[in-house]
Amino acid sequence: MTFHLQPVRVGLIGAGRMGSFHAENLAYRVPGATLAAVADPQPGAAEKLASKLGVAKAYSDLHALLLDPEIDAIAIAAPARTHAEWVIAAANAGKHVFCEKPMAVTLEEADRAIAAAKSAGVVLQVGFNRRFDTGFAAAIAAVKAGENGITQLSRSVTRDPALHDPSRIPQWTIYLETLIHDFDTLLHFNHGAKPVEVYAIADALVRPDFKDKGLLDTSVVTIRFDNGAIAIAEANFQAVYGYDVRGEVFGSKGMLQAGHITSSNCVRYSASGISMETSRMDSDLLREAYVAEMIEFARCIRTGETPRATGEDARNALEIALACIESVTHNLPVKVGAR
Image 1 (cartoon, rainbow, N blue to C red):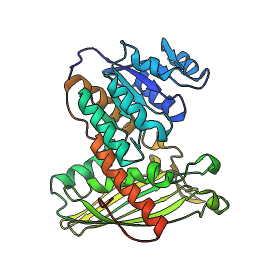
Image 2 (image 1 turned 120 degrees about the vertical axis):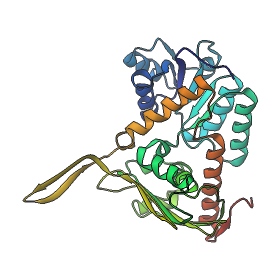
Image 3 (image 1 turned 90 degrees about the vertical axis):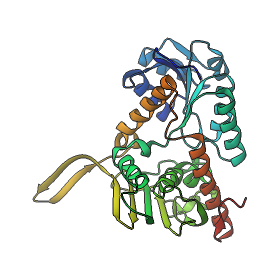
Image 4 (image 1 turned 45 degrees about the vertical axis):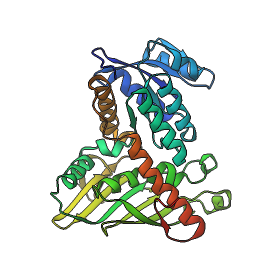
């Protein structure tokens, strides 16, 4: 492991919505790091984003970015189903890696990505942003310290604000890209326990006309752990009132709650009733968490620390996601770790 005294020079793969958001954070809000290059295979996309942020280097050839000797680390915000191949390629090129979730969509891919990072001696951090939200981080720390006692029940909710174009959503997105956040959260709400069984039900309730095309936009998942605890994760792709991310863990010593939907703590009281403004984008609701995860990434590269959201964490959450897919496919509970 090479420790860095100078700012970490990060190259970004992916100039879409989330990539652009990460790029802006790296360019302006992450001490210890600098955005040094942008890469995207779409003609002109990398150049446009790089020019907007004053970044000198733009690549349409992603492999050329990996070969750039002036790049220390790669941030991957490419389409989800390509993440594993870029994690492996970046690690093999000796670059530290930040990867948006999911890190992989098969366990074999996940194992290869983890092995590549270990072999290269590079940092591998996965974008489980909820772990960097102050409320979720405090709840997880309290569970780990035993302050909440033994976890008995837990719950995690993700409700996206709008389902814009269902034709662009790949099959099983609700588990591999949405609920995977909740699975990671629930694993850390029950520190030290392992999931043993999953039962998932799902349907297309927001856009039933797309169900025969493979879209599932609503799901509830029950997870049983080896210490007897039961967890529930739920997701829906259209909450008309805003982006809704919340968690709760009930233990033998009490209960912890985390998450919110409001964009400010201002509550309006008027003749029409009581109202609050809500967030409509993940990049708004969790803005500080997105910045904090990049700050940790840069710090881990500079100091040799292990990030809190590792490749192994990504694999553990993926294992539950894959069990959900099997459970929905066969309409049966599925043992975790049996595949």
